[in-house]
Amino acid sequence: MLVNRSFVIYQDDFFKPDDQIPIDPTTQFANWDCPEALDFQRLAETIDYIQTHGALPAGYTSNEVSNTHDGSSLVATIDPWRHRVPSDDVDDEGDAVIWLIVDGFMLLSDPTITDRLDYRFFVTASYATLKRRREERQGYHTLEGYWVDPPGYFDAIVWPEFLKAHRHIPGPHQLQNGDNNGGGGCERLVLIDTDVLTIPQVLDTVVDALWP
Image 1 (tube, helix red, strand yellow):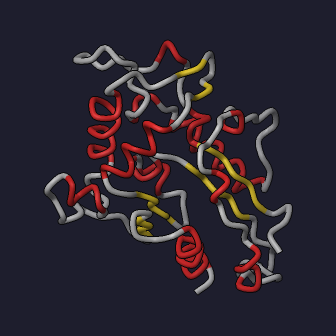
Image 2 (spheres, rainbow, N blue to C red; image 1 turned 30 degrees about the vertical axis):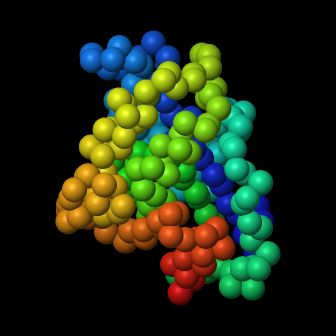
């Protein structure tokens, strides 16, 4: 199976230092939800290293594992889908496939990252659902401290930046914004609308895409 042959890296671990996060000129909020807050180059280098060496870079640590994710008790186990995963997962040369899972809210906004991904899953929802989930979250561990969204942060910062970064991606956000043409789109994209799909249905969708 995939034991000891998979890695997970989180884009949230590639935020710039706190004093380099852009300040929104209108609200004076620190803007953690714009591309300029992230170190895409370091993320790309980390992806390249794992793809080349089949291991995490020396000294790699994750802040993300320190954060509390409400609702994590709802996550399903993979057991019902285990029979769908081939036990001899190898590439064309017969080498064991190593799976790298990259999690992040801006992965589809930068071509240098998107082009490194063999499969692209866009997990999304409507404005109302995304706002509720964000505002129910606790704070976040940053490189140098702890961040809690101030009141009104979702509508002032998060939602406008989300629309700007994903104007080329189809999904429920396009309908909310009065634009359902999906822009230019994204190749090999699997849309996962969590307003419509249950967690087991999401797993069905992912497994069907990886092992059709």
